[in-house]
Length: 220
Image (cartoon, rainbow, N blue to C red; front, side, top):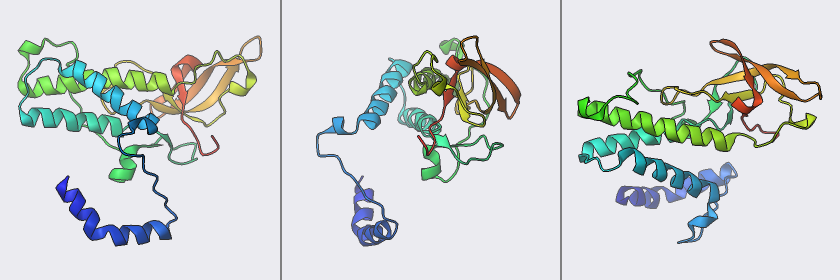
């Protein structure tokens, strides 16, 4: 924190000039008023909620605790925000990681340890198991909040072709979001669509609208 304060003091002039040239306006919340940042604080609360339950009473060293916090941070920063482009063949979403490192975050493949007995795992595997538990809990909650909670009873709710959507799937590995583009919708007898075909990098799948989360676009 001291290093960050020193950085701001030494580079404040350059930061102000760049912000003015790019028409960037910083809006700060008042001190001790975290409720002003509604979505941000809701995300922090959700992260803390699941992190407490994942770690529980396990005693971790500084290195292990730092590792699990960094891995949880990567999960949070991998979440899809909106389409990165309007190209129908592009399945890449814009994520917080693009603003931090300029690219999406990835993680090496690891064995599924969610249901493995913790007492039989090494310390490294225990940390990996915590990461997988956090991902399973937090990603499910994030997708549920992202979904539009409607009964699809109006034609205005139909998903448009080539819309980038997040597909709700179980047992996906950490940082692996299932994304695709709508290719076709199927209206029912009442004229309202409730099922869609989705083109993904692995092929075309068919899902009900309850399993589909359209990502916000610039028009939204």
